[in-house]
Amino acid sequence: MSKQALLEVRGLTKHFPVGGLFKRQHVHALNEATFSIDQGEVVSLVGESGSGKSTTARLIARLVPATAGEIIFDGADVLKTEPRGASKQYRSEVQMIFQDPFGSLNGSHTIGHHLERPLRIHNMATNDNIEQRVHELLELVGLTPAADVASKFPYELSGGQRQRVAIARALAVEPRIILADEPISMLDVSIRAGVLNLMEKLKEERGIGFLYITHDLASARYIGDRTIVMYAGHMVESADSSELMEEPAHPYTRLLKTAVPNPQAGLATREVQARGEVPSLTEPPPGCPFAARCPEVMDVCRQVMPERTTIGLDHWVRCHLYEEQ
Ligand code: SF4
Image 1 (cartoon, rainbow, N blue to C red):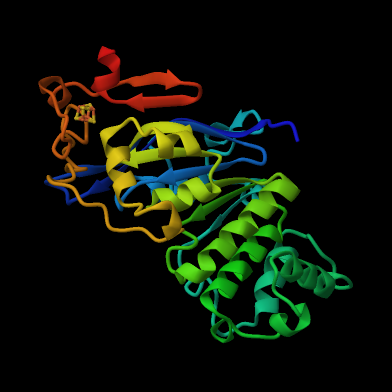
Image 2 (image 1 turned 90 degrees about the horizontal axis):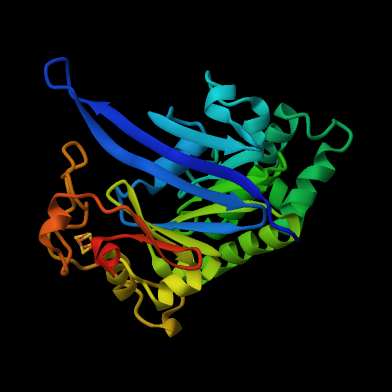
């Protein structure tokens, strides 16, 4: 399948206002994020809590308004063409799935009800074929026998099965992009690969583009064609996922790699261990956001924010170590 850019994000920025009338501040949650997702491509976004990963997804899903930047979908900047909020069509073509599959399902409704709702709202089925469409969706995500699963309530399913229902619900409206915000982090390690393999199948068979958000490099590499590393609201490195894992350039990416024990550990990871503090997001330092924790910090790092430096084919990094070379 020939690839074609589906979604392009340029300079996307979100500063959340905090505090009262007398001490107004802004949390710099995301700063000038720029990247794209092609048709049938999985882009992994990896970083610790507070790095801006989820904010990126929520901005693209139009759940929160952007402070600045562009979200180009089908050749148009939707922040300009749909300034008051996402159109029904954008909301069906760009779907989001969340970390907690139980929290995103209403416990008093059956699985069938959860899948019928988007089909009706987006006119994707008629009364005559809606039951058949529900069963097709359940079969597509590997939940069989479909009629049996459709009659169950969320509490009757396992965490992995509930996340498959959440994916089926997203698929009901035939999206072209799925924003998956830590979809496996609350699942048992043993069933994580099953959900990632389902995403892989949907990418291959349907050409869906995924933004896969995670805090660990192991799963980012497992599913992602490309991986972007985020730190304190900034994108700091991007490369082909295998290259990033084998030759991480940014000191923070190297640190993340130490949390992946070994290839045999599959999708299990350790906590990231680092000295120093994550910088304030309300009063961010002028230089590199990683300076307080970086073992290779130089004087310039504390004063000047590094620019993107290309260091390989589709591989860039924001770090003064590479600018000097
Ligand atoms: Fe470390 Fe400096 Fe590179 Fe930042 S710019 S990651 S502080 S070497």
